[in-house]
Length: 405
Image (cartoon, rainbow, N blue to C red; front, side, top):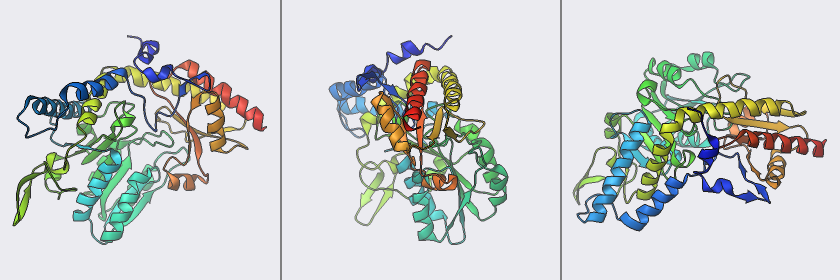
């Protein structure tokens, strides 16, 4: 069945907006995706009809909210290719998920002389928590370099793996360059030396199907707001037996089994890591987003790849424009520079034409340093973008080039 992008766009009310009297061309999807009407309606319906705190309540509203909240966990498990939902912990986003793993697994498993292996592609959220833990424990951070196309150098990666490597953590897809890492292969190589593996799935979850059992990792995380869902909700998946072995990240209501002034016992995962009132509406809204997305995921990805191919061809034809990062396997993200123009100026001028992109270092300052550039302009496409919007971007960039020539 052909992918009908015109019909899909009708599901996203914000896409009908105008910016500076121009039709909105939203190409900042790697920062956050837009929300379909079903997600907006689900949030409204929850607050209008089922708003109550979850768990332990015996009245009908609480029971209804609890059922919807736990059904959301089941939907997340399905989205991640899992048969059991117990390893799915609701968090505020991938940033909290990574901090949770650092503060629990990292604090209890790492010691002086151990190595944490990161790649040059990492977002700050998958660098800084490990720097803090390394400083506390005496562990050492080791960084895998890239090749000239913006891909992880697998030969260098293999050489850096050793018996000292206790944790390997990497982004499934680069938010700055769009490069897709060979996550299954990298995980297998890490497991061969006995390392624990955490994958940051923020960008991958928004673009293609995730199958955690096939990947073979120990932890996986993603943020709802990049996957058509609400802001402030995300998921950490961990192997249930591993999660159960870890100390709590935060303490308070709902994560305890028994409290006494002589001591407290904690529940198993996922409740152990969901202290206090969770983002109930966020979890339910995320489930609505995933239920919307899963049936069209394959066709959506194919459409995005067509947009990427067309945009790459058109931008390469613009004199003085250089695409940064040309991995063989990419999602629909294009980072670029125009000779003689700062990325922020490009973003401002595009906004005048109603085109929203992201500019700067994209929370990847070490990556930009390795590329010897201060930052890039980044256009990131979702399945609700069109070929007409690709043309609109190219025309506006050509106009900008002529302005600065």
